[in-house]
Image (cartoon, rainbow, N blue to C red):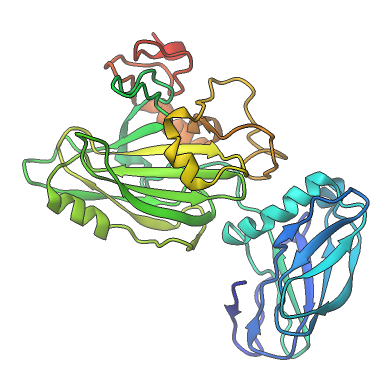
Length: 371
């Protein structure tokens, strides 16, 4: 639970509440507003679903009210009775809560880290109200200035690495760099492509490759975005500078557009951000996902999860599929798509491609994006 400090006697501006979730929590008078979230929803029968609510303070009272027509459509309607919340998460019966709604409730933990906002707070009374809204749909390309992006290497190129048989599981986003002279360096500002939490930060290097920095964001229980920052420079000073250029830490909450750091750019090979989005089977650990990365399926444009609504990265659900990498272009917001449409796109063999999702690639060509 994350407390938000507010001035005693102040009020946060109200926002339109339709289709949002309203939590009403009675707590002792204090200058701290406590953010209550649905930490879990059990997988019981549709007639007897339950929601676990973490305690705002020991032995306080809590109630949950579902509001908005959209939420009612997935079973979030009515009020769960007020009851005491102890020192551990308390369980509330939620009759009629559908399976889809249960998945949505689980995702509200991620929504808080995404574009969640406390809408109102009444001070001077025992009631604190918070309205949380889901994050905006659509990935933003991670460059703060889209004009910095001048080239890309396609998703799905097969093989990307002949030695390992790796199929390219993301898009390489290449910033302007050929104007730099020997020894010159600059930085390209990076932002969070979606709301979520910083799930993992680590160094990585393949044999014969320069060191890269891996930044993974967890959007919710099922969807993740990974950005591999690759200066493509063997100079240890460049790697050190890249490490110093990360502005976030594991566990940190970010919203789409928040600054997360910089890519260190020199005119050596092609510096880039390797950009991936994937659905992770909830039964597979993140470490197992990494250990078996080469075996993770690369989607070929068929049976795509929706780009909006239930089952999408923004309204997540258990899709019942194995962990799978998807072409990021499919889930981009319009301005990011437009930028990729404008710039040079290439396969690993140097072929110029007409699109960025090289489905059906063979012999490292452009696949369906061949001219």
